[in-house]
Structures are given as C-alpha cells and as structure tokens.
Image 1 (cartoon, rainbow, N blue to C red):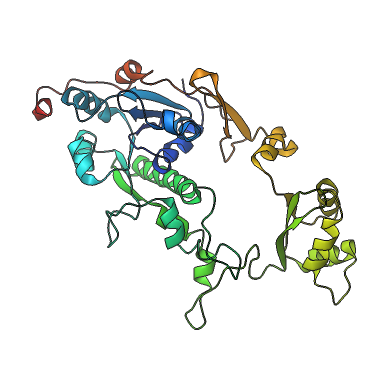
Image 2 (image 1 turned 180 degrees about the horizontal axis):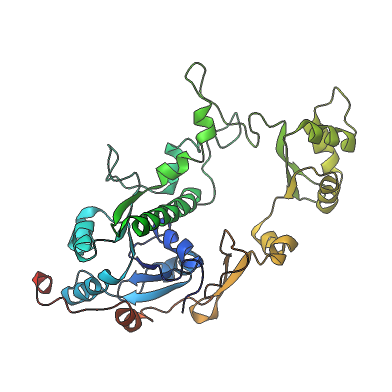
Length: 371
C-alpha cells in the first residue's frame, strides 16, 4: 500500500523520454499510486539510458499494454474511470490513433485531469514543432545569459528545462486536483511545456528590461546587484562558490583576506583562496558567516557530510542488482510521511495487479475491437 501525502491519487504515466515522466515521478515521491504504461518488451530507456530510466520510473508500477492493439486498448480504457490523472507527451494525431487523446478519455472519466506535455505548448505558431528542455533554455533567454561575457552563449550541461518543467507540471496537477475536489469533480486539461516553466527561471532578467537600454548580457558567474558572486579555485585543486550580497558580508571578506580599500574584494579573495586547501577556505568563510559552498562533483555529492546526514540521496535497486543514486523526495514533510519504494519495477510486473485494483470493467463490444 502506498503511503505519503498523495496516497490515493491514481496516475497513469503514458508518456515517454525524460521530461514528461519526471512529472509523475515527483508525485510518486510523495505517495501517489503511479503506473507507468510500457510497450511490450519494455520502455527503450531501460536499455539505452538506464540512469534516466531510474529517475523516471522510481516509485512506479509497470503496466504493459499496446494501445494500438484493440484488445489492449480496451483493457486500458477499462481502467480510466477509476483513475485521477493521465500524463501524455505525444502529438494529438498519434494520441488519437492510440485512443489516448483527451476527447476519448474524458468520455470515459469526466473528472480526469489530462496532462498534455509538449515542446512549446498546445497553441501558438510553434505548437506542434518538436521541442525539448534544451530549446526551452534557449528560447527563454537562459542560454543567452549563460557563459563568459566575451564568449558564446552556453547551454547548461544538465537537462535543466526538463527538471524545472517536472515540478511545474506536478504543481499544475495539484491545483487541478484541488479545484476538482472543491468544485464538484470536473476534470481539465493541463498544458505543460518547458518554455513556460523556464521563463520563470529568467524572470529577473525579463522584468528588469524596459526596452530603453540594450538587453542584459551574460556575466559569467556574476549577478547584477550582488556585490560578490563567483567561483574561486583553492590551493589543492578544488573550487568554492561565494555569494556575498550584503555590505556586512563584503566587509567581513575584506578583513579575512586582508584587502585594502583600493583592492577589489573579488580579486583579493581569489588570491587568498588559491593559497589554501578547500576545506580550510570553507571552514574560515563559514565561521565568518559568509555564504560559501563547495563546488561538488558527482563523487563529492555522494560523500558530502551534510547531504549524507539528511539522506538527501537515496539508492534505487535496478534489475540485475545495479544500484542507482537519485535525489530523495523534495520538499520534505515533517514529520516524515512515508518513504517511496527503492526497487524499480520489472517490465509488466504489475499488469494483472493494476488491471484488477484500478477497477477494470467490461465496456461491451464496440469499435475498439476493429482497430
């Protein structure tokens, strides 16, 4: 039995790739009963991108059906009346062919929350184009603002647009679920795309531009209005990040590093840090209450004492015994509200179970038998 704040919320994840399935992964982290719809033989990510499969399949049961086959489509339609949410990320024409379009599913469940993920949204000149988080990072202005001032724009080395969109999508589901509970059961379509999500990441740049001056330009590791924000190399080959935004913090840095009135505090801090090991730099700045953190690699993350104390990284058990580290659920509910499963489901492991406990019913003979 699923535990957690969202226990009782039933979600069918009929999406693919990374971004859209991450939406329901967030819900599963908090107790929702999420079932991943897989094709016969399993999702391609199981073999081609196992680390991404762990991220997108965590906490989910596995249901194998092929909606393009009539008998499977009928079985799938038979459970729709008993669920709350469906997540899809295919073009409408393909969804119609598979019987997963909104019109078809809403006829089976008028309270269904139908989450349609696309690259650019369901309307507008770009609707229907292939899209993803990378393009959203560019379109939203993030790429323009990332990189050195004299260098080219830089794409982030992590799928930031996908991850941000996942939390936006999960929040959209929660608002729709709340509205349905309060207003008598009506469902709705949730239009989720990474462009809308990423615009909230670059909002400070946009809100500060009134058209009377050139658009803001990338500043490397700096931020407008923040006195001292950068990364600094330490004497042992490590790096630390410092973000000092108050005059008190800047004065403290000057005193610590012995900067004169004419010295730029950033330059002086760089010299000071370069002469010391990373742990000493961190300890001294933390003691002075200067906002500082290590620039962690993946190995550093797994060994970080603060993250280990908080159990911020959990380990999933994949098929074959592989251990895959992933972030623990965020945010946290205090006191704890349950813990999601750490085992990844096998291909179709829960097909019979899901068809039974999600309330399969006989829809009678119909056109679905013909396709």
